[in-house]
Image 1 (spheres, rainbow, N blue to C red):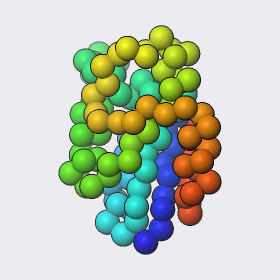
Image 2: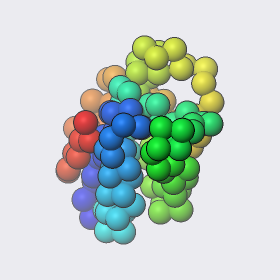
Image 3: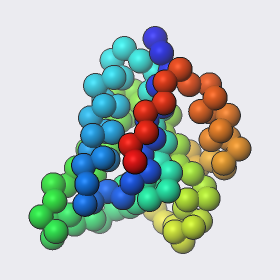
Image 4: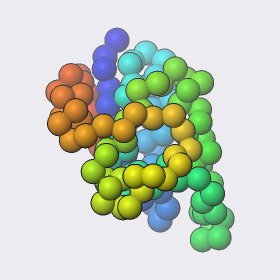
Length: 118
């Protein structure tokens, strides 16, 4: 079993990167230990009450709740990314651990594979 990091650092709408990252995380979780990292604009995936249908995009954000069902419990959010976007007190829509940049680097170093969706 490999330790695989999935890094999401693009905004949720206007491209398919977040949806692709989610699909890969769920598919790979069967035979790997998956950690999901929301960094940069990726933290915007975690905001509730999004309405992508208004811009004719598919609403896949609620599907992030599937992470728990697939036993993906290591979900990390970059503290400085939240701060830079004025979201430090925002309610996020899935269970997560907010961590600083140093902790992020330590976790990345412990991974066997890192997949970046940017």
